[in-house]
Amino acid sequence: MSNQPKEIDWDRAQYANYSDNDNLYLPYTDLKWSPSGIPPNQQPLEVNLVDYWGEGRINSYDFITGFPDSININHQYQLVSNGTDRLRKIPNRLPLYDYDAANTSNYLRSSSVLVVTTMGSIIIQKCADDIARIVSKYKGIVIAYDVSQPYLCILSTTLKGIGFLIDDQYPLISKYTEISISPRYTFRSKYAIADSAIDLIEKENEWNNLLRLLNLLANNSFNEQVYTIMNANKFSSNNERYFRFIYFITIESISFSNAIPTIIKRLFRSDKLFMKNQRMDQYLKLGWKKDSEGDHTAYGGRFEESNRDRYLWSFIREYDDYFRITNSYFGLYLKLGWKVDGDGDNTVYGGNIEKDNIDRFLWKIQRTNNENVFKLVNKHFSKFMKLGWKKDGDGDHTSYSGKFESSNEDRFNWILS
Image 1: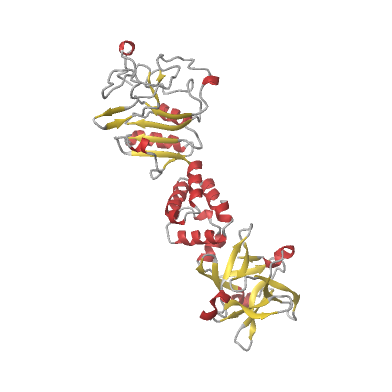
Image 2: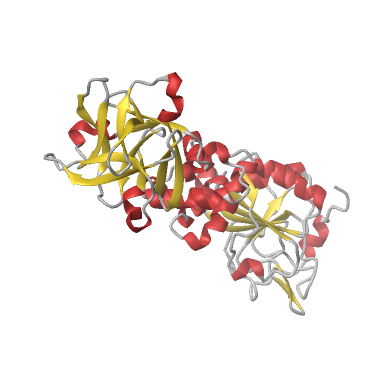
């Protein structure tokens, strides 16, 4: 760059103002640039704040720039350019050889700075590279104030290369919002964004913000973080919350659809699905015969293509993770009978909805570690659907709901497809 500041002016300048700035007692502040910098073992492990091309705190007629407690990276001969300290030395200055040599590797460790700021500055590629080098890759933040679009593009592209994205809705403390120049762009790590999103899972009034962060990551192809959020323990350990969130996002435009299992999306679309018992390897269907109440007993049996619709079921969400399940051929809904057999089980039927007994027709769809395998729990009786051991003359097994048995878990598992 042209218009490089002169050594003679710096030599003659008045010392930095440490009345309005904190003296960080940096070993290089009053020294000219040195190729040796400071030894690596003496470089700080963590730095709170660095202002790239900063000049310290300037408060001129309530027009505020800079920070009193920042390390100010600047040309070795640069002086304060504005305010009452104009032409004084820059406080807490870290020297660069010149404007074109934006490299602090001899002074600052990589990934060591928690907050990097820059204000109204020219961001050449070397500068952007150095900012990307020094900012903490996991918990760091970069804040760019009043950076013109060409330079913002350089900075954004470089920071995206290390997983940083603009997140302008991130709540900054007043220290960073009281700066008078704008606009302000806040860059955060994909890891920090994912952590923030996971923190929001339990706060349903914040789900719009959670959705925004998921879309931000997905739109920038940070799919690993999207999957981390969608498979976080706060979802996997709370079946109701997971289904409520899936319902919440289906009414929005989302860009992370691939992070939602296909079978879950089909459930919420009420697609026609097969239900196969994992233990018996048989498909759920309704028998042909009606009982005296007009109900059809549910069985598990061998699939018959000629009667395909008997084996197809649609799930209609009622609320949370409770669904009504209707048979495609008969148009009847799965329910549990009132009678309890000698094993404490209730027979599963298909019947017409009874509004006075709606809980008999509601089934909790409980996820397992396999995204296509579910358990079905009747709301009224709190019993798990399964197939009986005995075969009838057609080779079918009657479907019951009973107390869950971990020793026979696969009897209670249903594969949806």
